[in-house]
Length: 251
Image 1: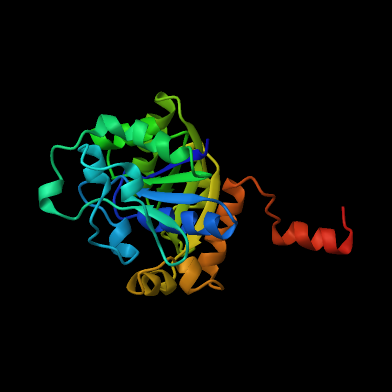
Image 2: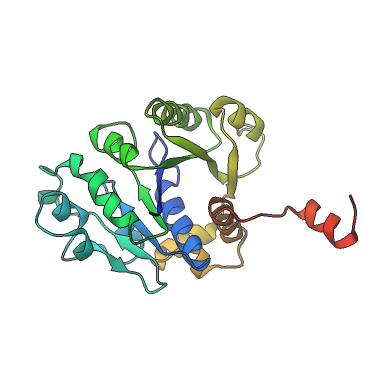
């Protein structure tokens, strides 16, 4: 059985979908079987961001019993698999969110990682998605409203008995007006597993309908997402200081 990780935020617009796509793509680069599922059923973005805005079968069809989950899986040119949700107004109602856990279990049987990109907030579909997951990664920006909503996400996950893998801080500028990382860590009571800098490469990747780890593999933001993927996969990630110590035999 593969690991099921939900990417949540509590607040919209913090880089949740970008994180889900790039974490999935980075894990795929590590040789893992990965599928990224757009469980944001009302305002989906996965297909849009990866160049497949309109497809014959979506997660919505699966939840309505009109198709199997295998029919809703599409492979990006990079090799990363995705399950998009529908952009059609006709498809955003009357889906059975109670089916989400069983659908996710099916995907976990054939993949090392199932990455769930959830909607913002804590509505019925978000709760169903968290219920279906093994663990949660919370995404936030370094500002008080986003961190406050991220704290809600952490609390909801823990109340549901889910493991909080950690937090990812996106759009970080290292500016004086931003919340210090130490304060974010203390407030969320969870480790920060990655800090993603503000980078125009992310928008350029979006315009190219691909993950930034593919379009700008040497960019700082791509290196950060790959580092997070190694941590999630359980690999040892050496810091610059520890690498220098090892090279020179210090310590």
